[in-house]
Image 1 (cartoon, helix red, strand yellow):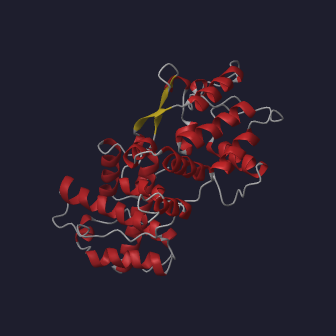
Image 2: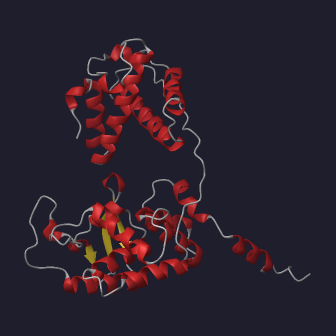
Image 3: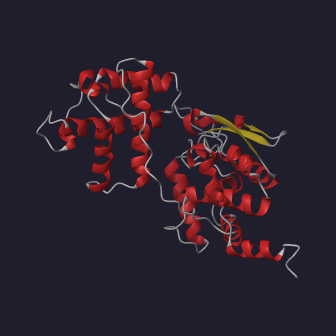
Length: 327
């Protein structure tokens, strides 16, 4: 939860703008607040406006816009350098901070007109290490599904539907727990989910998904389901307490089933199932990269491109299929 009294007015104005005009999600607003709080505390130390070195004890609500006007690109670089050297922050963490700072200064200069010069105009994003995503191969995916469909587990229909949706649709964790029954259109074999930034998108359901959801709905509790702020009575997936299933419970289910399938639960996770779905669709379904971008709800095509990695066997096979291969 954001404590607005701890912020300068111009930070709160930026957060309001991000929420109401840019339609950013509550999680994004919290991240913006955290990033800017850290940055401005560094600025107070950097500009010698405080003798306190403990970030937790530094107040920023007394900062004036005149101080912000003095910030230059070199000062932002100094902050990112501090994160890299002193805090040992990952490139991805620094990239997020840089993005927040860029959006913040664009607001101050272009929207609020509180500063004339935007010091972050030429701020570059820290280069990210390109790592191939971890994912289950086809046989491991089938094994996970087979283990989950175990009638010894009294919630096997629910858990099997959860794993099936992850592996077939590439859903995010938050998207899965947010599904309401009314979001599903069985006649059109599709459902709507709310993704990052509160953006709604359509997920098309194959036969496996429709079958798994249908079988779960036959046993989903109908009596005693809680009517609460989570709108549990509308939720597709319920916990044993008859309320909307939590992210933590879903993570526990996935971890348990991975272990049951003999797979390394420290290597794989809910998010890795999303990677798995995307990779399997790309490798076996000849899915166009743009279609995959829409399916996964990626804002940038560059995010989707991590799934275009191919196995060495596929590279070899491509050479062997060359019509000139036989000489």
